Structures are given as C-alpha cells and as structure tokens.
Length: 174
Image 1 (spheres, rainbow, N blue to C red):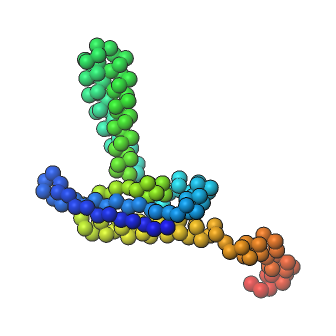
Image 2 (image 1 turned 180 degrees about the horizontal axis):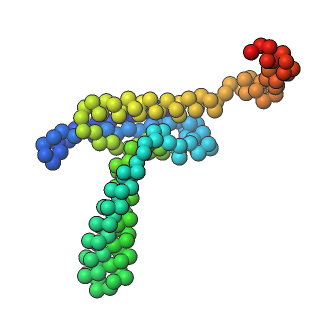
Image 3 (image 1 turned 180 degrees about the vertical axis):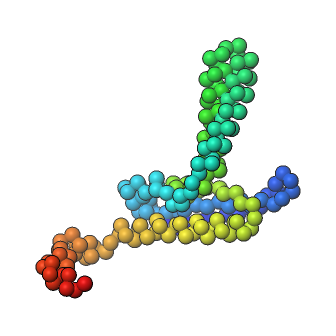
C-alpha cells in the first residue's frame, strides 16, 4: 500500500498562486481483494462537518434550475421540458459543488485518485501530512486482518487464560 502525491501550481484569476495536490492510494491485488471483501472502500478516512456545503449546493442548484428552466422553456416552448431540464441541471450542479468542495475523504476517493486545491504552500504541506496520517488506518486494518496463522488458531481454539480463573482469583490479581 503506497500513497502517491503529485503537486501542481497555477495562477488564479487575481494573480495569486494556487496549489493543486493529487493523492492516490496504490494497493496490490491482495489488498484490493481485502478491501472488496470487507467493504472498506466506503469507509471514511477523514470526516469533516460539511453541512455548510449543502447550503451552498442548494443555492447553486436553485440558481442553475431557474436559469436552465427559463432557457429550456423558451427554446422548447414547453413548460414540462423546461421544468425537467431545470431540475436535472440544478441537481447536477448541486452534486458537482458538494463533490468538488467536500473535505470528507473516503477510502474509495484515494483508491481512484483525488484532487485537492490549496491556497498556500503551508496548506499544501498540511494536507499532505493529514493524508499520510489518515492512510495509517488502512495499513493498521490490513495488519489486523492478516493475523499470523498460529496466533489465529490460538485465538480461535483456546479460551483466554483469564476466562478460566475463578472470579475471586481474577479480582485478587487486580
């Protein structure tokens, strides 16, 4: 399991320099099979409260809906076409807004590769460190799933020693 980064610079609309970070988690076929088996791709690596994005997506969707509905109604001379087209355009714009701006990162995002926009070099370095730290979770999970065979048999065949002790002797040890 390897985390790959690619960094880019671009000039913004006001002449400011923006940075783009692309991150991808490369896994072997065995690791991919484990991810599929345990449905780990839907797990959240980094969870952030993105409620403010929903408000922005609703606003954007409403604006796009009105513009698209008016335009399509005018072009097609049908209110139904304008309404359906406006709903589709508004929903698509809202989905795009949330997907592009969200900070919550799923394992599947990094398996397919994901772009992050950063406004400064410091933010770029923080985002890289944040992702490296978050990718320890899949590594630890992989180690947990792959128990050595003798230890796995020991866990499944024998009860733990503390389970055999009478309660008085167990409490005396504490």
